[in-house]
Amino acid sequence: MKSQSFVRVASVDELSGDGPFAVAVSGVDVTLVRRPAGWRAFQGRCPHQGALLGEGEIEAGTLVCRNHRWRFALDSGKRVGGPECLASHPVVEREGAVFVDVCPRARDAHKPQATRSLATLPGPRPLPFFGNALQVDPARTHLVLEGWVKQYGPTYRIRTGPAKAVVTCEPAIIDEILRERPETFRRSDRTNRALSELGIKGVFNAEGEPWRPQRKLAVAALSQRHLRQLYPHVQTVARRIMRRWRQAATHGEPLDVVEEMKRFTVDVTMLIAFGHDANTVEQSGDTIQRHLERILPKLSQRIGSAFPLWRYIKLPGDRRLDRSLAAVRAWLQGLLEEARKRLAANPHRRANPCNFIESMIVAVDENGQPFSTDTIMSNLVTMLLAGEDTTAFTLSWAVHELCDSPKWAGELRREADAVMGETDAPADIDALNELAIAGAVANETMRLRPAAPLASATANVDTSLGEFHVPKGTTFVLLFRPPALSAANFADPLVFRPERWLGRFPGAHEPSASLPFGSGPRMCPGRSLALVEMKTLLSMLYRNFDVERVGASREVAERFGFTMSAIGLRVRLRARPVAMA
Image (cartoon, rainbow, N blue to C red; front, side, top):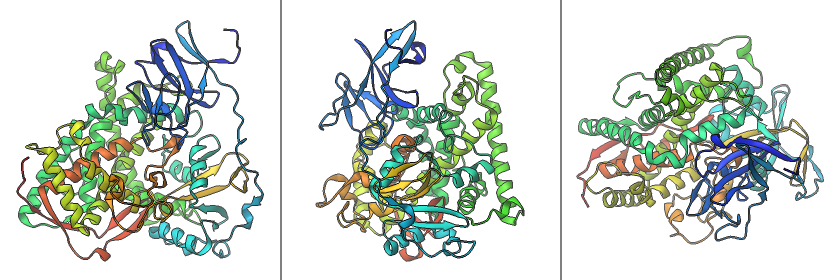
């Protein structure tokens, strides 16, 4: 090799199949694909919203982004159906390894010149010592911040205790921050500190080089390319919850929708990620969810607190949190020990791990060392929390919206009858892909009621965003819902209209303005699985039951606790005769 800028990125033995493979060269993301004529190396991030292309898939000679399914020709890098073209990098194979030459990037060359200080931004008047903390009800944080947008504009300043932050719902600023993680921006310092104090130091709050190997394992465990093999687990849990609901329908029992959906999502997560059949669906009384539901709300409260009182005095809520964390960790520790015994007894399984927990045990970190037990446990807790709350809350909000939209409940039912035939669940992924209306209901629900309505990020370096100078250490709070409720992006934006996702509704429709899974390199790795769970359960629920909300629509409220839950949502089910296609 004549050039001294070629960098070894992987052993050929580590790269099984044609790819795509996500690798990093001196901090630059690169996508590798294996072609009959040899290796190709392209830029690592999609030009659309910055998702890692190495987390996508290869279909019919194209590289497909996992975010919005943009396709790029493998021979040229040109986008199919668009003008964009992926930058390519020189790549060679030598002595059993792959080497890539990445030219230095001219960072920020495209940016307009920053002319304005963030100190000039308006914002609510802070109180001495507390700042704006006392003006924000923790359970309504997202609603308060969204309300201030109407008063102070799309970008404004707040203060929590001594800590200052900039709140924004401007799509261009949000897009750039999400694209530039983890190099230019990281998880906010408050979030990272609160998670670390709970002993959670996994992929969600890992930064820099430690993040990459953990991210790779999480994506592999939940990737779209594995859904065909994973789907029977979703079917198993869905059929169990249908039996549970039939019994409730027979007795006329009202159901707490959020609790029911959590049983479903926890069991799916446990089967897919941990290879463990928890079967909380068929249990009565307290389950592991009772402990899980205490963690995120308390975490959210600590992130927004003006003073860290819990570090000095443990109040009853703090003690309950400690007990719940201990119970969750003890439960997961048992699963970890079982997995280690399975791998020790089966060398073939160790070489071919079957799920996330086994992959974490056999994998190595950025230094080539096995992951520590603390890191593995942190990722198990993260996977369990993320797999439970976000999907369960979206399913709950979908039921709420459908209770007010009988037309779409009927459309959903007719589609399920036609697609599912004589089966009690979508037969496979191909059948699931035919459930377009179920997918549209899920997407419209997430637009109106995003389970994660906000996120935060801190600048690693001095940089700029639009017209603003951004000093190192500046924290931004990103509000995701206002752009999705803007008439500039969606026609009739405040109304539940699933037809907009089916191409049936005229007017503005900008899908990239709705970011329920985030965007950029750190987009939620569970996106594909979440959509599979939603489409499966919604189609089965409305095919088998008439759903009636207990109480009025106005009695159901949004509650923020790191994620956004539906409070007061209860329904009664009535079994209906199923029309076989």
